[in-house]
Length: 395
Image (cartoon, rainbow, N blue to C red; front, side):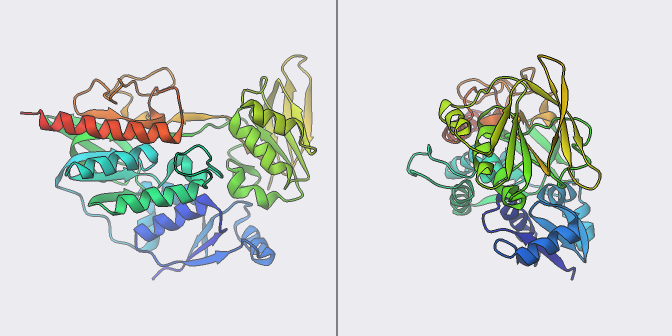
């Protein structure tokens, strides 16, 4: 039996995702909680050379954080590292295959199962963006709830029905064979379904500048909720001018020694968040500045930025760079099959129909303008009901 260790924090959504993935594979692991243990936290940093949680080790070998774990699983390499037998191919035909396990995907799966349709839900992780949201105050029925808690409630609801679930799988392609939609995953799985509901959501954009990839996890982070406390009393920059960037700046104002808020244009976030940033004592704004290069060898030491109005360049001395610049839809695997916008958002009608027979879509992967949890859940329900109507009218 392989020895698996997971360094985690109580409130860390990516830690919850990692543990959920390991549990879905029935893997026993040792959890090392560093929430209030500075000594263990420093041990984690020294062993992994990373300042992010979770950090996962298999037989003393560092495999990185949640994204690294999920990518290993998606390609089938995690099973090899864990010494597990290869997964058996699925030969049965499902009525509905839901791709994604965020609010849209889980709602679609619930509604499909309630219509007595044989349903499988295939997802890279559980919860999507909601799982990394700190506080939610606009979901009906809850005056305030954390994202991970809401995801747990969604997941518990899914478990009440006979919904087969495959976590840690990344879709590589979909082909239509007569009335069957053949779904292929990067790990080699093949799933056949009469209807597909695409609810794969969106992923965080990257800067794609020198130093970003090399220093990811070594000062470059994408989740202030998860990793912010690891930068206590350090100097950090937040990149972006929308809601997520402003929220991160406000959150880090009470944690970091200083916060440099860098945006390529004026702020576009909600006015209430802008007011909070303006009143934050430790936040310095750099509007109309372009990030050029993230500096550092073993860890982040600074950020080179350029004033778009004057052309002047300057270096900010930093310990961390938090990237919060928006989202791209997870639709690469289906671009050749359905109509999309220039950004890759799947075009749908008011019922979630893509125009391709038997393929529906819902949530942030679509061209719907409102990226809200309640909207995604509602779209998931509509897509499932449309899928049912499609199936019952087929000859």
